[in-house]
Length: 268
View 1 (cartoon, rainbow, N blue to C red):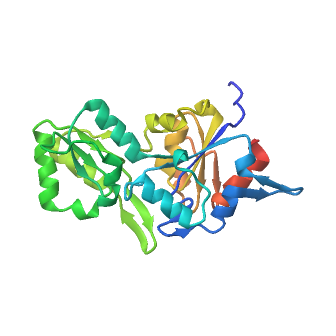
View 2: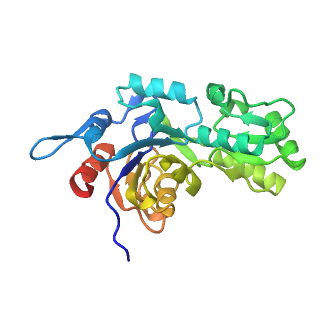
């Protein structure tokens, strides 16, 4: 087995890993900035790695997401964020289709300039206000008429302050079942999503590591793409999640600060 290359990039999930809605995971802001060692403070920003924040969040556009993170005290630049909304828009432009957008209204700015009149494609994100019979039936009929079904992601559930909540995955699965078709998925855990996130970093997958709270979408997807994956026990994590994928996560940590500590002390 070939030796693994030195670490060059760290991919970090957002919702459930750094924050849950408008509350930061304890210690996450400071861990992103620096991590104490026995001798001194090592600033993660000064470490010889590229940082990318990769998210399946479809509840808001990138601009609003960045604003939320900055209000929570996170040191993040817009060009460091790669979202499944960006990946979906790229696919729509490649296919040159007019989508029926089942996404939250706050996500619509990321689709500015995409024609949506007389739709001939269906795009599904997390959109609770659209997941009712009339809208789902409209999507169903479009797909039956040949419109491609594009899932921004197929997460089963996500973490809210008051507990777990259904993600878009069950609704995508319902449309797949009713139309006897298969959705094109653009977000995590798709291999292409992780490779796109690394574009421009001069980093091969085996030189990257992913930190996330979703064992299948974050860790499993990253490891399928050739990266290492660290699972954190925050957000949507449930006991024994690490046993749901094969191979198992490279590492399971209590939280993001512990994951950062491992990277700085063991992988650099």
